[in-house]
Structures are given as C-alpha cells and as structure tokens.
Length: 231
Image 1: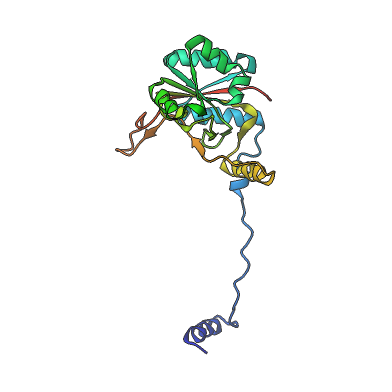
Image 2: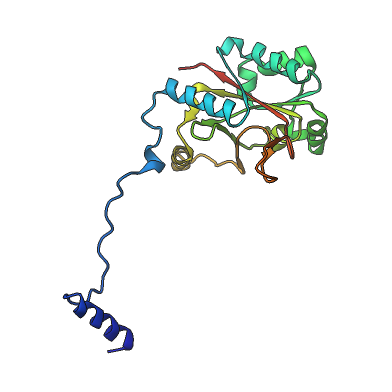
C-alpha cells in the first residue's frame, strides 16, 4: 500500500466508511442557461429585446422596416452619416432587396469586387459608410454576426467611419449558444464554413480609462441596424 492509499484509507476510516476509488456522479445542474436563456421569448419579444440592448448599451441606431422599404431606409442612414463615398458588400442578399442598386444610383456606391483585390481595401479606407448584410443577430448582447466570403470583405464593416448592418428579423437568435447550434447544423449538412466569423457589438468603444466609455477609438464611430420585418 503506497502512502497516498494509506492516507486516504485513514481519512475514510475516520469518516466511518470504506475508501472510495471512484467519485460520486455529479448532480444534474439546476439550470442550463447556455441553452435555455431567452429561448422562451417569441420572435417579436426577441427582436424587441435585441433592439433595446443594441440601442441602449451598444449605442446602435436601430430601424425596423418592411423589405420593400429597406433600400430607402439604408439610403436615409447613408445621407444622415455622410452620403459619399459609400462601399457596399457584394452580398447577393443586398442586391436581392434592391439596396445595392439604390445606393449605386443615389450615391454612386462602390460594390466590393473579389476581382479588384487590394483596390477594395483602398476604397473601404476612403469610404464614409460601409453597408453589409448580417447573417444573425444576438438578443443577449445586441450584436450581429457576419460570415466572411470573397464578395463580403471584412474591411467593409471595419474601415469606414459608419457601418450599416442589414438583417432579417427571423435570424435574431437568443445568444451565442444558438449560433453554435446553427453552425453545427450547417456543418452536418456538408455546407462550407466561412473562413472568418465576426460578432460585432456596435461602434468601437473602450472604457479602460477610469471606466469612462469612449466611442470610436479603433473602428467605426457610428453603427446602425436596419431590421427587415419578415415574420
């Protein structure tokens, strides 16, 4: 018998029982917030909570709109922040809603082109507004999720002074745990995963100095969500 076994046997004897070589089963958790928090909300309640967190905590301007009115809503925000120059993601979803064409017509917006290479970066650096389509919204944090692709460069939402995110109300999830579930389901279907997944929670900010929040320190100064009512 080694010293450790003898030591543990002595303790067990003092407790009035024999030595235990296997631990007791862990009790079932009383709650499973990772999977259950906010899931009881309806889609409308989820959207309302998402807007509340995004606007009050993340300082994001939020606007609900019908799909046919989305181009006008995005154009109005571009004019509010600074009409030109504007860079738009090459995302087919923006084109399908008419947003891309409207911005090209009204403010000569440039569309991100994978064939243009580094020229895309130069245009994003000079742009006042970047417009992208978000894949998901997260109720708990008020953030949006972007999947990168060749036609959807990360610089569009990072380099311009203002970022406008278009997303559908039906894609607002409770929290990151449900996002992970969605990604797992996509991988199980054999779909290719994006090279980069960004979770963006409003304009860049910091409170490192005396807990005083400063906005716009290392990225866009303004952020806006245009939420399309589709459910």
